[in-house]
Structure formats: C-alpha cells, structure tokens
Length: 474
Ligand code: GLU
Image (cartoon, rainbow, N blue to C red; front, side):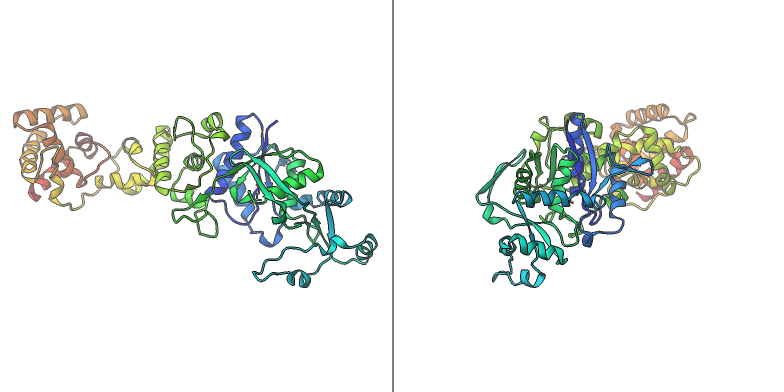
C-alpha cells in the first residue's frame, strides 16, 4: 500500500515550495489509491512559531490536499504530532545502544565548544564512546544530563533516490548525530525515521536540501533492521533572484497569494509544474486531473524558478474555466464598485470580462468606462490595420450618429445591421466604423466587448451623447 506523509515543522507559514512538497506527496498517494497523512514535526520547540500549525491546516484545507487519517482529536481525526509521541522514541534509541549502534554521551556544552577546529566546525570526537559500562551507569544513576548519539560506522553509504538516482557518501563526512536530546525529546532526524516506520510510509518526498541527511537515515534504518522507504527528493526551488525559496527571504506565503487573488486551484496547478511536467507538456490541470496524470518519473532534477508571470497566466486560465455563475458571483462586488448605474446587467458584465482577466478583481477596470468616460487622447482613433485615424473617425462618427439616432430597436442585431449599412453607404470598411465608435464610447484601447455590445450596455441616449462628444473632440 502506498502511504505518504507531509511532515512540516511548524516554524512559519507555508510557501509555494512547501505546498509543492505536500502536493507531490498527496498525488503519489492518490495516484496509487494510497493514503496521505499529515505529521507535524515539532520536536524542536525553540523554533516553534505560534499559529504555524493552524496556517498549515488552513492551507491544506483551502487547496484541497486533505489528509486521510490521524489520531482522534475531539471525535474527528487530526494530524500526527511528534511532541505528543515523545514516549515512542526513547525505546528505539535504547535498542540501538543495546546493539552497539548508539551510545550515551555526557559531554557538556563547554567540552563540545572546545572541539571547534580553526574553521569553527565541531565534529564530535566520540569521547563518550570510550566510557566503560560502570561509569555510564554511575552517571545515569546520579542524574548527569545525557544525549544519545548514533554511532556512524566506517565505510561508505549508498542510497537510491527516484529523482537523483544512486548517491554515495563517505561515512567519515558524517558526525555521530544526536538521536535523543538532553530534554528527552528526539531530534528531528531520529523522530522522522521512527515515525516513517511507525506510520508505514512507503514514499518519502521532500526537498533536495535533505539529500545530504539521507545517508544518516539509511544507516539508522539499517541499524534498526528496517527496510528503507522509497526516496523522492524534489529539485531546488528558486525565486526570481535565484535564491532558494524560503520564509527567510520573504517569499510569499500561500495565504498572501490567496489574498492577491490567486485561486487555490491555480496555486495547486502552478505548484505541480515546479519541477514536474507531463510527457505531452500540457500545463493546465485541476487537482483531480493531476491525480490521474502525475508520474514521479517525470520529476526533473534541475532547479525550477518561481515565476509570478507564469502563475498569473495559470490563474487566468483557471478563471476562464470557472462556471459562469461562479465567476459572476466572485466578480459582483468588483463590478458593483466600478459600475453604479442601476440599469446595468451585472451578469452580462461578468460574462464579457471572464475570459479577459487574470485576477477576478481586474474585471472592474475593464468596465469602469460604463459609468464615466475619462478624457482620452485622440490618437486612440488611429489604428493602422483598421485604416482609421482622427480624420476618418470624425467622418464615420458623424454619419454613425445620424444613423443611430434614427433607430427604434436598440438590439445587438439591429445595431450590427446598422453598422453594415453605415459602412456600405459611405464607402467605409466596417472596421472604420466600429473602431471609432468603440473609442468614442469607451475612451480605451482595450474593452471587454465590441462596439455594438457597448452601445447595447450604454443604451441609446448615452451612446448618442458620447458619439457627439467624440465628434466635438475631433
Ligand atoms: N520536517 C521537515 C521540514 O519541515 C520535513 C522533512 C521530511 O519531509 O522528511 O522540512
């Protein structure tokens, strides 16, 4: 059974790199009809950040990455939390001592500090490894503070990673790392291994910064006589400045991205693309679609860069795919703010703006001309392809004003027919009529719909008024 876990330390908010890890864990589980769990790795209490846990739950909930099991909390299941499992770790460390794969260390801070070499690096010198059984027992009996250290054997350690393949490291590069700290808490590295085993984790997915720690994990699994999980280390994720994405560099949290107007489904989609791409290079996916197509073998080794422009495009694509009524509901407050005219049909405004915005809130600037025509430069009447300029515009607006005044039925079909006949009877192309009308009515180079639709939205009186103003300007 495939079982994966997202194992964040509650040291701050979740950024896009954290979400990518959670997402890939989730997808590997779902693709294989497996189980995805959440485990809060909070054994380093000094780095604990208030509210970080709550932010993790909220982000996972909003993005749809729901976890499948956990210990019962208030009748519901919650995540696994390492600090609540403190008692589970010490027996494993003691079993390693019994097997001569770990040892008690009583060295105090002063002694450890004195081990620093000229570069300030301290590698533990195994002083306590040499203590005899009697001395150890006496120290334990008299309550001397101790830690438990892993005994790193001589030789080399090789492990396999699904993305980075086989990696070998000389054991001499590793220190006898602490497994249990003097406060009785396990270190993050030890608790991580014990819990991955206890929770039957089949795939460990995490950032490539953990590649260097993995040999220590491998040695622990071997020492405990356990099979290693499958490792999937993800490529480095950089920000636009080429730095590793991190809370420290002020990179945006998922909450900030949501506040900026990114849809949760777009954030999830974009996170999926940071280091993975399907064989057909398709880019737009829902979470359910990702669950079908995600293949860890398509994860790349090369670093990927967080690109706000690309994510903005992905957001626009997801906005286009929203059901019209959902977009209309989201856009309504912005449209109401921009257009106060009570006669306007907001559902229609939502319809014409939906495919033209990258953020829902951008719909307002597309329609603000409806309430108020701002001053504009007459150069807007120039359009090379349409063969218009202020002079042509003056001529076509004059004939258009006269023709439109005569109209009784103010419908889209009637307006289109009128434009065709204005063009034909005055030796103008349709573009030479439509472009000036659109400009005179909106004062903008880009509008969410064409000239005749704008006439319809504004109504006859306002249309005629703006056409007359346009002629005057010219
Ligand atoms: N607790 C680690 C972190 O927050 C996760 C390490 C792992 O996934 O093995 O980055």
